[in-house]
Length: 336
Ligand SMILES: [Zn+2]
Image (cartoon, rainbow, N blue to C red; front, side, top):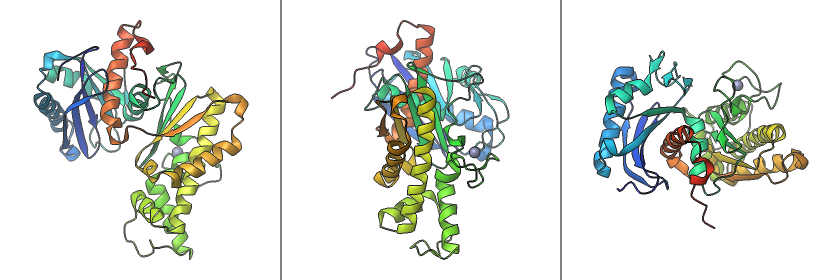
């Protein structure tokens, strides 16, 4: 891989189950992709060493020397401080209490490392590399084991006062709705996340609703999506309910900040029209068009690459902050 215009960045996507790393050029070409188990139970020191080794493997596969990298971007679950690069007790990384991940990796790799929370990174990925890219007022929503979001306003990631902006999953869409893990009721997440959909399906079955999922011992969001695809009415109803919840969240966000584009990603988004049709219907019915007349809603275009490309896009955004004249102009125009 040669560096081309705009240089190369290392990209690392840290999740509770796997660490993925690659080298990414300015156009979003991924080289040397490597994935390894996180082995989160071994604690921060071992996981950090594993992250550095995974990126070294990716560099070797891409035949790129570490000194050739302009920076390394790391997307990780929050809570974290993007400025100091410290991670605070993420639920899926046990034992991580105020771990200075950026500093530790900078020391190990000898290159500047920038940390970004995974939902913000995914928003930056679709903003920079997605099929519909460079739209300045954009919300990215991920619907997966949780529901999260990243907000781009005026062509820049919007972090808010404490860096925690974009908590789309905990917008209330039904104040008498089901309890959420955060302690509130009727959050988007409490209706639309995979585990919450599965819980609702189980409750409906216990209440006597017919479903092919009756008798399933473990039920996940993926099981619900697969059953809905096979024509199970109850599973389809769970996705319709989830789609409406996400749709109402989008309406609220669009009313507040006048969005041009919403991109919906995450594993549950792979349900396609089973999620997207009720979502779009809720937006069509309830959006005050005067507040967002050109709002487009698209499914993610990057799929599972959103994590790696998000880490890369986060590093490039931080490099651009250091050289502000770059800005939007360095995003390649979209094809078609
Ligand atoms: Zn909540």
